[in-house]
Length: 286
Image 1 (cartoon, one colour):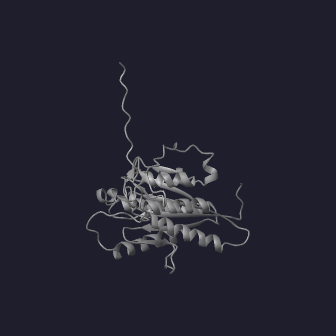
Image 2 (tube, helix red, strand yellow):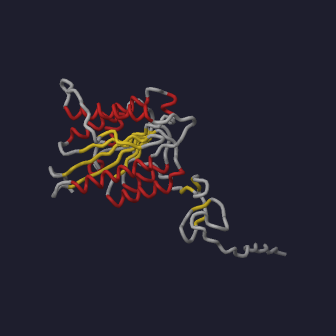
Image 3 (cartoon, helix red, strand yellow):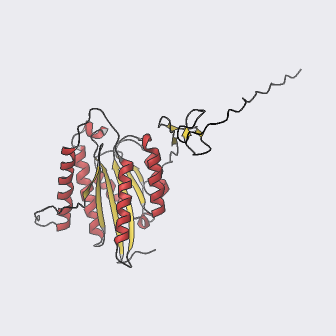
């Protein structure tokens, strides 16, 4: 389907700002580099078409908040030679992020980022924009996750819920992994038809964002993008929240466990103990 002037392209960027990320602990300037790249990437998206919309969400270790747009209007002084909207995006994102970091509680030990909750917030925002759009206009939405956190198997069920919700709503989820490969988020990109990329190096993050994630879903079919890697579809057990290769599934609630248990830890179903299978004796040839 060809795009027309009545189409709205909504891009929601989820930026992982958790200070527990390894790349931030090793390099204090990594966060500033990522913020500048995300702001430039978002402004480039707005520059492509006047109807395009942008939202930026900060995913912290204790809270998830919108950096742009915000309820209160920030007083921004116009910069000579820069488009007013670009200045508003840059100043608002950096101002709101500074408030978030200063108000967040200090962490004693590394903790997980609330990525699954951030995706839920993004989907709710997309649904609201879709509901309030003008008659006759079509909305094309996608979510870009920029994170350097490790795998969060404890959020497995929430991840699966938001992935299939995004698939049902027709929302594409893209992932830009800054540090390690993330199998759960890679599953989300495969389910929703998005693009997954693990950066080989942090330098040049803006170039990777513009090359891989700026084109929309229809345009990507005509471009030469990095080949898709094999998706790791391992599930996380409900008892230890760890990715497993082989597990046991409850026949009632479909919960997954890494070991056999007499009672399901989710729905409390009591399993019948079947008689052990006897091993067949090997026949000896005389």
